[in-house]
Length: 187
Image (cartoon, rainbow, N blue to C red; front, side):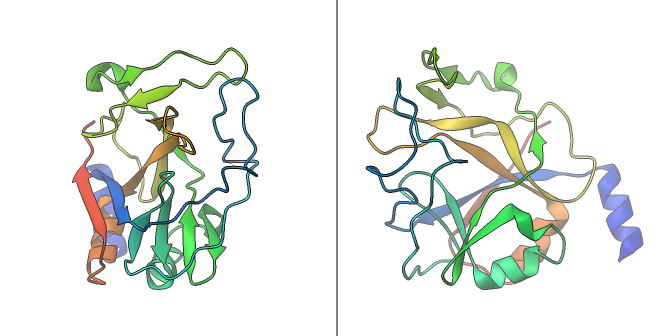
């Protein structure tokens, strides 16, 4: 297995992953830390709401945060650091620490006006299909350097695309998970 993993890293494919709608918000609209000018939620400073029962292993909140089940978490922490996740009851919010560069020029990503106070765009549209500036050099869980979404929808949030290396995706798929959608990222 170590030799196969080493060979796989030479030509590492990556995948952008998504979860099914779980019918919940990650942030309390009235209590979240927001930019005073544009109102965008500050993900790093805002507390997340506790999650109630979810029927999928992979899901997404209304405000675009990826959530995984405990069994997926237990598989992923065999390969990536636990600091990439935040526990909420029987579930985990996913916050990858390592960033990968998204190629917005090739993808033709659309950007809304930039806030003069926080520097975020009012919208960033075009996460899929994903284009990365370079192939992954090693196995792992990553976040794109760009955050996507549209703040025109009250309570919405800009969030990075979540990228998983091919070998980790294979480990997750072997669990026969529910709610996961994925597509290969181009690089």
